Structure formats: C-alpha cells, structure tokens
Length: 409
Ligand code: CTP
Image (cartoon, rainbow, N blue to C red):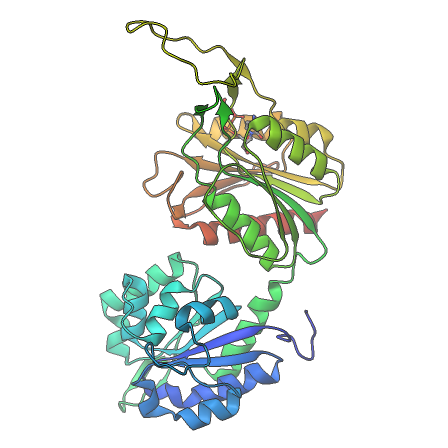
C-alpha cells in the first residue's frame, strides 16, 4: 500500500479539469499519477475540452473521460454516483474561479460540478486564474469555504500569466501537485496495523415495548472518525447506537447496539485487542429501572407518571480503568457551563490521554450538524482550540492528535 516506487499503487484518482489555460498541463498530472501507480479517470468540463483534447486525456489515463452528465454510453454509467464511489481521491487541476464557486456554493450544473458536490473523500484543488480574479474577495471567500470543508488547496504561484501580466495565479507545477497528493495520500497509511475502537451515536433506553429515552445525537462525528481512521489504514471496530448512517469502508467492522448496557458490553469486550479507543457516543447516563415488555397504559385521565431511573455504567471510565500502558483513550465532553474546567476534570477522572470538548454554545457545532467546533485538551495541559469545520475535517484533526500521542509513546 505505501510502496515507495509506486506510492499510489491500488489508488483510484479522479483528475477534474476545468476550463483554464493551465488545462494544457493536466495530461502531465495524469501521466505522473499513473507513473506513481494510480489508476486515473479524467472528469472534465466542456470548456476544458477547448484547451486539452479528449484523445490526449484518454491516451494518458487509458480510460474514457467523464464529461457528459446525460451520456448514454458512458463507461461510468451511473455517472457521478458510480465515479464518486470508484475514486479514492480527486485532484481538481486547474480549478477556475467558476468551478471553485460552484463547489463552495453547492451548484451542480454539469458532469464535473455534480461529481465534486457528491465527492466525500480527499480532494485537492489547484486554483489557476488571473491575479485580479484570485484576489477578488468572493473568490477568496470561496477558497476559504473549501478549506473549511476539508479540501486541500494547492496554492497557485507567482509568475507570468496567460493574459500577459505577472502575478499570483499560475497553477502549481504538475510535479509539485503530484508530490503533494502522494505525500498526503500516503500519509493516509499512517494507521496501518493499528486497531481502534470508536463508539458513536446515541443510546436508547427502553421504557416499554414502544417507548425509549434517547438523545439528539446522530452519530455523524463518530462515523466520520471511523471512516478517517479506516481510510488511513486502521482496522476500526465501530460500536454504533441507533442511527441511520451507513459506512461501507471495508476496514470498519460495525457492531450495532441499542442501549448503554449493550454498548458497554461491546466496548469492554473489544477494547482489550485495540491500540486505542475514541468514545464519541452520547451515552444515556440513566435508564428506567424496569423496562416493561408491554405498552404502559394511562391509568387515569389526570394522573401523571413517575419513571424511576438508575445509572448506566460509564463506558469511558471503565475503559480508563482497564487501559494498559500501551493503550490510548480519548473521550468527548459535551458541556454547557464551565466548559474547560469540566472537560479537564473528565480527562483526569476517566484516565484519558486527551479529551475533545464540544460546546453547545457554538452555532453549527454539536448534534445533527455536518460541522463541529472542538477544543482538544491533553494530559500535559495543552489546549488546542479549533475553528468551525466539517466533521470530516475535525475527525482528521483528532486522528492527527491520536497519532502524535502514539508517536510520543
Ligand atoms: N460516556 C460513556 N459512558 C457513559 C457516559 C458517558 O462512555 N455512561 C462517555 C462519552 O462517550 C464521552 C464522555 O464519556 O466520551 C463524556 O460524556 P458526557 O456526556 O460529556 O459526560 P458524562 O461523563 O456523562 O458526565 P455529565 O453528563 O455529568 O457531564
């Protein structure tokens, strides 16, 4: 997988080409990716085909290009959906202001832009345009939006531009683009050989045969973590509470559970064989003392009802006690008051290596959102406050922190 001669062996890479003069360099990017062992398919706009021919791209990639959303005989017959499953990474080079604007603002009006909107794996965007366009505040904002979506921007450089002026806006050279892609994608092997336990989602605590106590967690953060770690080579055991989310990664072994007790049983049984565990589930702290097997009926029109609750086991604290010298343990803290102080208390009380603090005060962060804003606090007292990012980008930060902590062992 991380072979130095052919570092991209086994990888499927989509090269997206939009209509700028730098498109003439795209065949060289394709060539270099193929040389590095990747299988490449080009997805192009109609304007791109004004600058580089179909024949050239199909010859260097050895694959039909993808250019027409409505083509009947396209090899990637289910169009952007099939291609987005096939691709392990996407390199958009050159990226014009137009295609950047579409991706940043959710516009899909042709083959390439719809593919970009549906692609959720590593994406590299190589802007190429005239200096004034690059400096236009709306373009700069769009590029920032892509960064916050977790896209890697391979910055343009300064030099002579096609319009005759000199300035920033030249697409980075193909060799540099490909070396950055290789660097980042092979970094994605940095968890190879590691086994990691992740908990995700809510738990449901049964009241009777039709009712439960639950919470608003959707599991998005935990699933993003499982996918990030698996993508980087880890074997992941994902213990998931009730959620509609799916994961197709072959290195994610999913164990579905319902209640905190079931999550506890699955987590404690599997932790022993793991190098690390990240517990992101929103576990119910309490469950009804007795769960009825029949539907509880109203006794009287005006009577209320009292539910007696008992405490659930604390999975994280239990793993903190089980933890060996070699294992790492990461928890989440969801706080509404005295956030840092409470998170630090949980870090030491539950014997964690670091804790990821979510605040419900931050707009766009927490349950149900596709974005999150977290602060990571470790045992040495280091506090890293993040910005609002996609849950995928937050998952990457947490995985990076886990790896850095493992490396220090
Ligand atoms: N957690 C757990 N088992 C529980 C409760 C929580 O494993 N029974 C884990 C969560 O997955 C999370 C961390 O503990 O990683 C903190 O959860 P949180 O709800 O913030 O805190 P609690 O420990 O439950 O404390 P409190 O609700 O009092 O803030």
